[in-house]
Length: 284
Ligand code: HPA
Image (tube, rainbow, N blue to C red; front, side, top):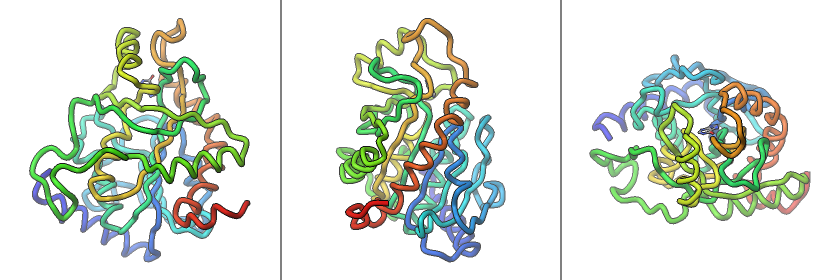
């Protein structure tokens, strides 16, 4: 971490608060092709990343690159439509900068979504997987370097990165919606090349169920700051070598678009219940 990170994140947080004064309860990061959730917020206020002080600018296809503030079932939320990836050339400090800002805004609930490749043979394209745990094989950690104790401890615990209470809630709500929800281990790699079949066999042996190029740095930083995390992977394709055909990024975006409605409905149901667990007792 660099010395000025706290001040930069504070400047960005103050800017956001000056534009939208409501007490934001949850932040949602939308993965490839999953932008629709942001469109359904009430009384939206959109901010291009380039207008927020110190925010990096997104370059990946299928990523809009804006922060959308608005109300989801009467809960004030901040939604990232597009995220920053390590493979784009950003440092992990840049990749996780928005999470620092969310933490400084006092947001306690973080929902991370992504499109991932299915390693577990029980999965199929279009499956939804709750992230139970992760493997960080990016070869880097966002907390490397000087630690600013205002953010969190030098050696943060990672025993429970993905809140058990949130996972239980997600399973219950998925069941109530008749939505099939898998659960598994997400492995993060740096990309941008997709994996080889040999790498996928290795990752399966290591205990991974899905593979992707995001989420883990964000989850580590969120835990560093004491936020509670829910992780959700859309299995956009089967990982390399599982099926006898090559991978194509268009397929990933198309599956995102196809499943965007279902994921949006699920998130809209989930957000108020994660923020106020007592709501979970009622239906609707
Ligand atoms: N591998 C890595 N990242 C991905 C994949 C994949 O197969 N699909 C979507 N993101």
